[in-house]
Length: 252
Image 1 (cartoon, helix red, strand yellow):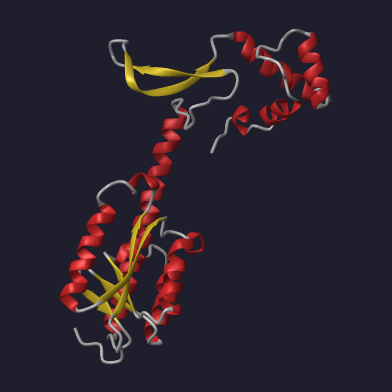
Image 2: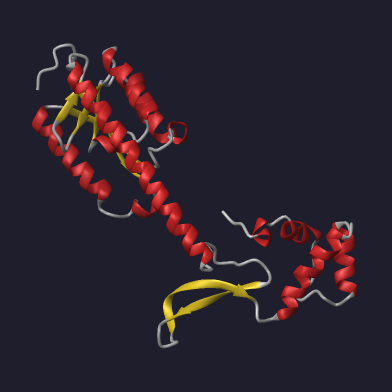
């Protein structure tokens, strides 16, 4: 590999996975092993390895990625290594920003698995191909997001709830197989069979709708002996419950 304008052989590697769930798998070690072998083959001095867990979909959310690029620029390290093109970016904003850095001679981008290099002297065809790959990566992210949203919405409609602590008035119920046996994994949210819990929530909403303040609701619920928990019964818990969008049919 000959890049005439670049005299330094110093390099950093940016190894990215998209989520915490991937952090413990083999992705980071695999990427790092490939990167180190690449540096040995190409005579690059690997100064730092940044192992990042964050999405590449939105440029403004990529703090660790930006810190890594800033480190390379501030340390006069020209070579930035990525395992594959989609490890660099899945948005066009970062794609354009890096092209400007490459064209100005500040960075050289390496895609280790493809043994591909983009530098100041690269052809316009190479830059165009990089743009096509960035667009493909962005579209993959779009489609994946749409699929995940559809699946999550369907699960939510079937009673799935992504929290171990359901709101007052609801409980987790284990899913059952076709023979009616409880399954080891999987639950749905159902109304609490302890109807007093449901009545407390309904009464809090009724009183609020009638113009009661939080302290007044607390006093009235206690006076009516509707409260089902253990004292103290805080006004803050009432306020939090009444503002919980779950009771309007929504959750994040």
